[in-house]
Image (cartoon, rainbow, N blue to C red):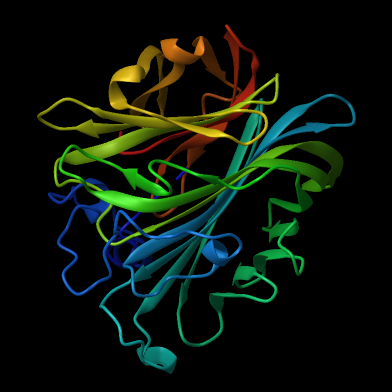
Amino acid sequence: MINKVDILLMLLWALVGCEPAPSTHGFAGLGSDATGFAQVEPDAEIGYPEALNQHPDFRIEWWYVTANLESESGETLGIQWTLFRQANSPSPQREGWANQQLWLGHVGLTRANQHFSADRYARGGVGQAGVAMDPFTAWIDHWAIQADDQAREFTLTAHTPEFSYDLVLAKVGPPVLQGNQGVSVKSPQGQASYYLSLPFLQVSGSIQIGDETLSVTGEAWLDREWSSQPLAEDQEGWDWFSLHLDQGDKLMLFRLRHRQSQDYFSGTYISADGTAHPLQPNQIRMQPLRQHSVAGRRLPVEWQLSVDDFGIDLRTQALNPNAWMATGIAYWEGPIRFEGSHSGKGYLEMTGY
């Protein structure tokens, strides 16, 4: 999932109410030099639940939840909850207001005829946002995700003037390491991140939209990703899918778009028992089918996705083509459904358009 922003730069622009200038160092500056920060190493061991903790020696990381939900009346909805941490200088960590960590939270809620989004900003070192373990808790102000002692069940909360949700996420399958044992390569030059997913989460809880309260159930996907330079300089954005196949398998795919060279593809096919099958770029085909205008942009809201080696040939459709996250860092994010060789539901994120 993903979003994955240079929060320092974007925070400054958002706080003064301006649109950020285009970056020459990858989307949102994520391809800029990372001298002094920790680097992704190919032989690192990534464990769970330890991976839920923050990694302040790296420049950027995120805790990212999407959920495909259904109300008691059969209405389809989706929610997003994301917390980002960005360091504006390497360790050692400074205390109080001098701390170099900046935090950003995004939440969204989508139904067929409505889309809501909100964001929050915080400075590290003063308790307004952060991550703690034993048990795991990640928060920014009153938006939070918290696990039980064994990180088998999570509570997820977000409250805004327009909408809110209070959900329980039960882990019913194993964590999955994306890429090569958790090292997810993002370009032919080797830029990479550490990437762990919890794609097997069952959801129950309630959503509030204005005066309307909905009881919901469904499936969720939690991503943990951290890096110091996850993109190449000429990568201008990405298209990312997380898919729940009706047979119980999962599929993650992404395309990183280059300005002057071929796009870079990656993904993982995840069997229903949690076995991960990393996909090579040449195994993946992602073809935009239909464009839609939203917020002054043209974006592909229908796609053909194919992975021949696993019998995958899908056509996706957005629940709401207007699922634009009108936050300080703007992008498209919303629930999708698909049919073809398999059917099911999932989420799509598109940045850099």
